[in-house]
Length: 121
Image (cartoon, rainbow, N blue to C red; front, side):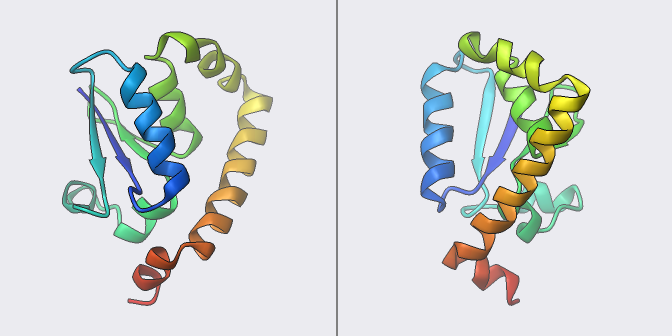
């Protein structure tokens, strides 16, 4: 089972994950809102702060994927998203997507009140 760790208090993140849940094959993904429990991520050495800042996915083999790589794992298993997963996997496109996601993730993290509470601990 693919485990998806996301920020459930972020409206944008929660809406996107809810959409993926609706279209995902049953029993294929485990969805973990880390604002409810970050225990499993913390066991893997990922801080709650990093978990809130970037999407994390643990694939069927136990490998952890972060950011765009995490999206690629999710998209590659969803019918209408497989093409995007392949497209984003091309090296130049991947570099651009990684940079854009990093900029967005930092911006979103700094604007989210619940993330600032974590950041200040």
